[in-house]
Length: 434
Image: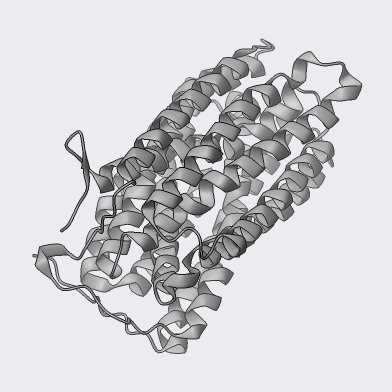
């Protein structure tokens, strides 16, 4: 396998570290922003949903515009890594300003939070789209795509772990009436960390490299891809992004307002941590399964794990702390497997038309973020219908948290079952492990 080294680090590792950094921004927005806006900024649930939705819609159109406008300009690692470095700088500058929202007069907070969050989202597009396109620039077959997708979700899972360690105690303290201003320092630290790893990726990307197939196998040339596969990939990401983000946004509310009622105590602070560890640790297993079963069959199994974890989550709460954390780990594993397969499939589609690979990634993330915008708007509306802080509302919050990913898993399972038959794409793997 050809590889670029920087200080003896293989390029795949550097890419995984950079994705870890980018994921710190993304998972912070999913796990923390909603809670921050309602509990510290003081917005209503409906206003929170509207603000997040508007910023995500802007993010989605920025992705689409960048994917189309730069599709012929970002076809090398050097160009892609340069653009993502600029994006990390914009995000790192705007996130701390967003974190200052609670210090402003109440009547200015919504406008300030919206403006700064929109600037953050535009910067995130500059970071996200080219970094995603690197998957196609450095891969040549299903094995290498799965490998890169797996590394991405190891980095993503580790990002969730770090955020959980920092945010869990903060959320629990707020639920006890302690209003902490640590989010500003959290934002500053994130900005510096992401800028550092984006710079590392840029330095590594100044020379071309490829992550080829394992064991010296020759890469596939002109790999055929059914046009229908693109429709399945887009349909899947709409479902997964829209519904899984409900679980993510409600995790902080669960820690703050449900855990004290159901007797989980401090164990609830490790909910995000267990899910992140599950996502990262399961990637090796999913990658191995792809070697023997192929992407479509692994997609089915990951969807089943996600469904099982969603069904068992309320039972695991009653089963005690160990059962609760084990179920959270399984949820992370199932969601991580589904997402890993989707990104590998996306890279497969984009590789069939390398000249438009950035455009494919832009359209993919456009669909993802539009789905999340709708999800945020609906979730804000639902939370505004009842007092989510009241003890008697704990069952509703739990039902929302588990019902959405259960629906996502079921729909993905149906899509996975029909994927091979409808696209004419064999489930057999295209490579063999050595």
